[in-house]
Length: 334
Image: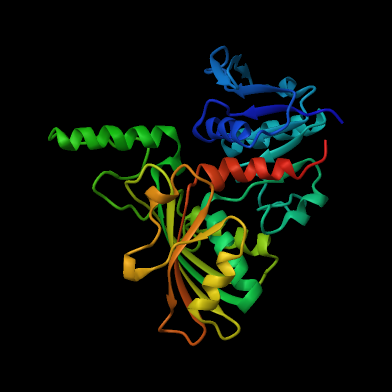
């Protein structure tokens, strides 16, 4: 079949913009690209491969002729429009949470469970950014040592809440520097000079946020471990880009840091940076604007016989969203 006609739904947003960059960087084979967005953005232009493309309004009729759609909008819009794209003959690779928990929709990280793509029915879901980097680090450990319990604390950048949240951090930083009270509009609390333990909405039934719930449910689905015990605390920090996570893993077999380093180092997409003698460990700045999942501070969990603690950092807009989506598309046959 000829190279596919590609649509990017949400092309003017933070993730959609990075999808366009990644398509170019990875030289994804396509015959043309159609940028789609809300009526507010329709008629504007974006640059793709040196050409200015006019953004079209995302309507149910807009998907006719498109072979693959990268969906980078909010969940409600995806629920509304993705079925129309599938009906028009497209495969939808969706970055929202709209379809992740449907039993007939595969939830895919290409390095981890590429075979799940085979049973898609027109929609393939891309996991939450925090889940992706955690599962990339957990998978080689699970394959070598087995895993029975995971406890995670995240330190999530504001870009995870969208372009408006990034602007809010900039405006708040300027306001504080000028001695003015910072305006709080997008994020639940002031983020500059602060750490906020609220990412997405609280679940009244258990006190977890939906982000924390997602990490547990998605990890079990991707890794095919329905009984895996997972608990997360998700925190927003005043960083523009790249999420960091402190992860404690309880293994089912005896485990040691050197063995974990070796397992991680041989896993595609993971970069081990772990030399405390040289103060060598990954930070958000290291991970920003690249596709690696960086892992360091690998050490024994002194509270558990078979426990390991590690520090995991990744760019939430790239491997956590856009790059993972494009990698999924690369596995499809057109």
